[in-house]
Image 1 (cartoon, rainbow, N blue to C red):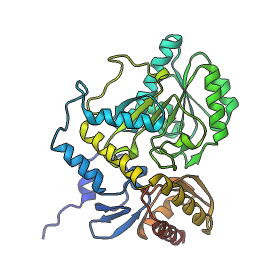
Image 2 (image 1 turned 180 degrees about the vertical axis):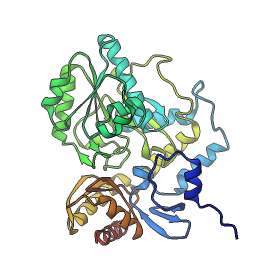
Image 3 (image 1 turned 30 degrees about the vertical axis):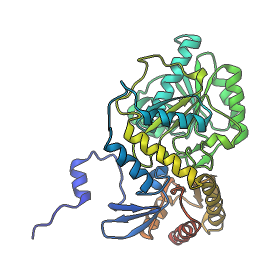
Image 4 (image 1 turned 90 degrees about the vertical axis):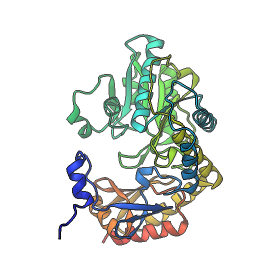
Length: 391
């Protein structure tokens, strides 16, 4: 009998090998659960890396996308479409920022933010004002400019030389920021919680001091809210609980619950683009923006901001009591469990075998970023499975 190649075998033959995939093929999702091709179920506490905020196969999001699919799918940004305008209005009202550019994902949203800051600097102080200051251990994306802003040298080395005009400084060090910010600096770009850097929240005092420093030096402040935004940390935008507001902010991951979208928001004072300065073919298309509007409705109507705060506090309390966990950090439902040794990869693999999906974001840190709909019982189940996975 002739055997048919498996999905992993077919993937290896047809797909560029850029991912170290776990040996599981998922075929179905429902709420906080995923099911593989053998029918095994998993409690998903990764949510596609903080993406599936309102749950797998969310009926309201699916219905919104399906309705729009039968009306209008794509016309490009040469013309107006109502869902894009409505989503922009909702995001500006929720964020307190003034304008939106729609992109395709987090990296292209960050590319837009970098270009916008450089254009602002060019208009403000001339062609030499283009430098962007970011933080060590940050992550802003895989495109070349976003990678140049990323403070992880091991991700950058393969693709050197990167675009010039970027410098990284230690997080939390306001003196280091003051030292590097001169007339050539257009913007400072930070994550309020460094997700890929190990789920490390930056102190509110530091962020407020950074805001004051940017104001005094006439420099824009950019918040990368791609992972921490849209309810993940317990407020619509991560900065809204920190007493500080950016000039530019970026969103992506959770905005359309798994459909590809990014957004670059700005205050009017930073909205420096002119016609033709930046563009995208697919960004802000009517199907994706219709889905995103349904996501916002779900977060609002189901009280998911408060659920993020409450379930996040429950996670922290439970994880702190687990033997082998030496620290728990994060905000809301973006949580890092710090282990006593560098065995996060092993624990992540064991957890998957126990029906729990998390990931090893650093050698000693396991990240939890479940759907915002997760229940108290599911949090207890997740921590019990995690505890069993520690061995």
